Length: 346
Image 1 (cartoon, rainbow, N blue to C red):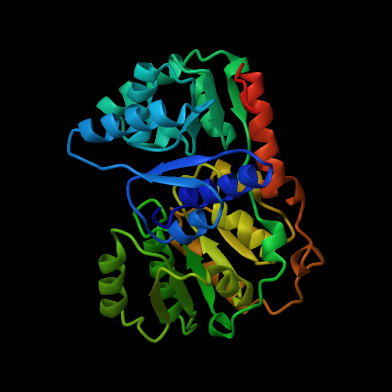
Image 2 (cartoon, rainbow, N blue to C red; image 1 turned 90 degrees about the horizontal axis):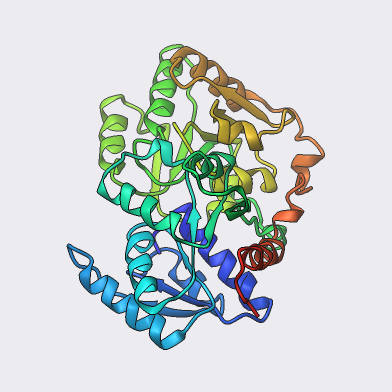
């Protein structure tokens, strides 16, 4: 349960399904930043072991399915999409796959082809984005077996969020620190603006494989007085709400959790011009930019940082059409989807 969007969505869905009276079991490899949230959801949590060839993982999942006898094995992320499929085949458990990204953007390999093999033999796919849904439709999965359900946004919980003074006067970036999230372009744009005399302050909340690379860049570029890497933070919502605006320049997304949550919190946004961001952008609070044009990124970053105008009515607390994405709503949509796929879900 590391600090990723898909892991957070598992917590929201588990809590919503439990609140609706369903018995929910979640198998995970290890704890992490969202483990406490998952534990508080009401779901039964099962740890399975990880080995190099995933043989032990598959065996433990097989034993779990034999014991629990679930109505459906809903498989999220690697290695569960393949290991879970093998275990479900042995136990004759109906399978539905979750698609949490745009698979076209993920490097292909043996696991990709294995997933395609098993998805074709499953009851169906539930995708959180149009890109994810269309990917499987293009691979001859019947249209009635591909269902789109967007990400949950816990709007009720977010109404109580209080802005953090720590992020006042700062822009903020939130998410996994990897190459796809493209924080390096934000840092380079800040470097460009510094040379022009504008000192943009940025907080970066998150961790990942690029943390040390970004830390070194900040030091080498002389940006330590402007940019702080915060690591994983449990108060990311408070930081976003208190900030001058959120910056997310990802190369690709499934459906962007952080962007949706930032909108619900009333943040101004600077986003990369990609389909996933265009799908959730609002003209009143969002600027889209070509991340390959560093000067354009710097210009938009400066505009966001120096904009002191009052936030729009939507940005002062209205959920901007996100009410239909509450945990309860998304949970009910899943139950309807499972039934559409021929599953007996009580």
